[in-house]
Length: 237
Image (cartoon, rainbow, N blue to C red):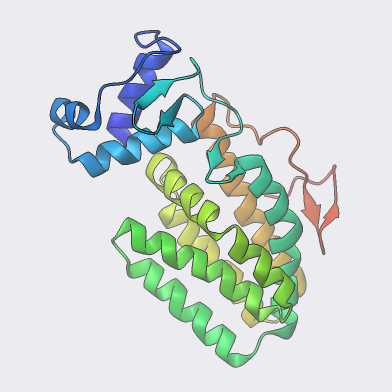
């Protein structure tokens, strides 16, 4: 998928496909690259997330830009939408989960990180990743937080899949998840907040590195510390 996406992206950026041009059909690309149509379909979704193409029902995939957007879209939300809401929800949620979790929550979180470490199927790992973040929200004992994460669940899964395939995030994410759970297990609000902040920093920077050279965080994203308080001076890693 990464090879197909990289090739198609390069041909668009070189001008071999102009804005308004239609890309070859899935079957033709599948034959050209000697991969399954499902791999081609994933690559085309990646191009669309990058803002290079759009899919027109019944007509095919068309080029709409010569370079990637700095704010990719995943389902109904942009990357910037997800960054902002996650920083203002998931960071304080991790702190509350550290203070309020029950033993069953902790058992479930350790079970999930264990499964994610062992999982080899990308789609299954992404589903477990979404469940991991929902479980932390449930452990906060605030159903409003859980509702927010469940609302953006599909977009988070699409973004997670994108980052894993193009940014090689899985192994690093697994390590970050373990550190988050360890902080929650210690009932350390401060450490849980710091570990979730670092996790979201790495997600944002990986995404930025994919869409443009330099890999700086997307402009407009607000750093938060503690329970979601904006902090424009401290860029926690």
